Every structure is written in C-alpha cells, then in structure tokens.
Image (tube, rainbow, N blue to C red; front, side, top):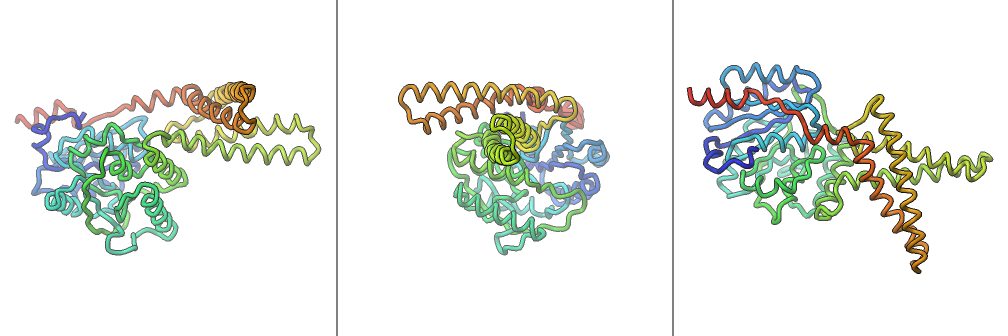
Amino acid sequence: MGNDLPDDAAADIEVSVVICTLDEHAAIGAVLRDVGARLAHLRHEIVVVDDSRDDRTAAVVRAFAGGGRSVRLLRRQGGSGLASAAIAGWDAARGRLLAIMDGDGQHDPALVTRMVEACAREQADVVVASRYLESRASGLGGLRHAMSRAAVMLTHGLLGVRLADPMSGCFLMTRQWYRHVRPRLSGVGFKILVDVVASGTRRPRTAQIATVLGERRGGRSKMSVRVALELVMLLLEKRSGGLVPARMAMFFAVGLTGLAVHLAVVAALVYAGWPFWAGQAAAILTAMTWNFLLNNSLTFGDRKLHGRRMLRGLLLFYLACLGGSFINEGVALGLHALGLHWSLAALAGGGVAALWNYHASKRTAWSAQVNRAEAVAVEEWPQPSARTEEKAA
C-alpha cells in the first residue's frame, strides 16, 4: 500500500491529490484540467477514486489520463462513502504530501498550491482550506449551511479540535502524519478530516487558509440524514477513544427508537381492545422489523441489502434478536438471584443482549455484505506495470 512505501520512493512525487467521485462525470474533466494546470510547476499526481455505479465518470478520467498526464484511476466495486474512498486513494498515493479535494468543482484548484506552501512555511502536519476562517459564510444553501455550522460546534465541543472548519473537504497532510494515524482511522461516512485530526496519539500541528466554495459544476450534494448521523457517531467513537465504534453506536441508537415503537404499538393495540399478550407479541415483531429497516439504511447503509438478500437478512435478524432475548432474560435473572437490584439486573441484561444483537446481526444478517465490503474490488488504471514502463521510457 502507498503508506508502506519508503521515504525515498515517495520523494519522487511532491504532492498526490486524491479526488473521490460519485457520479461526477459532468464535472471531473474540467476539475482534472484545472488542477493539473495549477500544479504544473510541481511533481504531482492526481488519484481519482471512483465509486460511481456506471462507467461514465471512469470513462472521462481514462480519456483525460490518456494524454500522458499524471492521472490515475482507482475504480471501486463494493466501496461506499467518501472516507473509505479517501483512505483507498491515500494508500495508493506516492507523494510526499497527500491532499484531497472534491470532484464537483466547488474547490478552487489553486488551494492545493497554497496548502503546499503553508505546510512548508509553518511546518504543519495538516493544512486545512477553511470556509469559516475569515467569514461565517460558507457558500452553502440555508439548511446545509445551518447543518455545517452545527457540525462545527459539535466537533469543537466533543473533541476540542480547534479548526475553524473541521468539516472541510479540502485539506493536505504529510505522509508522516498519515502513517501515524492510518491504523486508527475509522473510515466512516463523509467527514474524513475529523477522522484524520482526531486519530493520532497527539494533536497534529495545523495550519489554515481561507476559501469559499464555488458553484458546483456537476453531481449533487451528498448531504443526508445518514451522513449527519454518521458524523455524530464518528465523534462519539473518537471521544471515547475507540471504545464505542461508530457503527455500534448507530446500532444502539436505532435500538432506542425501536423501544419507542414497541411501547407505542403496545399502547395502541391494548387501547384498541387487544389482549396484552397479543399486543406485546405484535409490538415485538413490529419493533424488530423497524430496527432491521433502519439498520439496513443507516447502520449498514454501505452494505445495504436488497430483494431476496433483504428478506433473508430480515429472517436472520429475527433469529439474532431472539437469541438476544434469551441472553437478556438469563443474565437479568442470574444477577437478580445473586442479590443485584432488579433494575440494575434488567439494565445489565439489556446491555449484554444489545451487544449480542449487534455482533450477531453483523455476522448473520449482513454477513455476505460485510465480506464483500471488506474485500472491495479495485480496478487501477493505468496498471502499475504500464506506469513503470512509461517511466523507464
């Protein structure tokens, strides 16, 4: 992998710019042209990591790279999320400095040169292009701007990361810093900068430069409820020092909503005249189904089940939760028999059952998707042998 290269091998390229794309065929050609022109005075490479479902974005990148430019394409099949795409790109990169920017044209290509200069001038580990360094204006629409500001404040409060814009999608770091944090990166969601600055055993030396987002040339915003929740869970993971993984925290949060659904269904059915036992049974089935659907969209959204796989996953989820119910009862009764107060015994039983449900579901309901996502198929173009021959020529 790129982060395992010795320093002398990486020193041949000054900066590697990783651009992660998802259906950005309308914009990526102009972005590659502008970035390449701005970096012409530096030994550089551009690594495009494409997660698009069709071939249009990859075709534009291949056509552009065919002109002998320093552009490489990693096309992933089974990968999902900007954070994991960025890590894949940095792993493959060969530069002494590693940068990232969007593929939709909103980031000024001149930012990379400015960040390289700031890194050398201030001896920084990480240089961030900030929308909020000189102004609170971000260039985003009303709702997206409000969500961005809320995310910034939450990051400051939970992690104490003193960056004006910890949500920035354009930044640069040294290869040494990447090597330092790589084993602890979560690779969850779309806000990779938080992961990069909060995963070290020390705080990075940072520098910041001001920027404003431009007009998007193509593609669409990736902001969604799932993205916002993934950020919150990532912050909890980093705040707990990795004790509570982001995916597990999401699973538990979904479980709390399932409890609310359970109580609402019981109350509605008993009020409608159903016997309590029947209302309870219907509520359990409804809550489990609710939890499965939310986990499939949110917790395991990057491994989402469809069609027959979804039905099979639902049945396996029922079985996993049934096992959790037996564990819950056994732990609670055992601890209560040992003299623990019933409330604490019940809480302990519920906690152990929740852990069981998470791990059992991960290994059953979503097991095929987990294996597929962990072994993401990557097509690299040009092939490494072709780059070696080109360099020798």
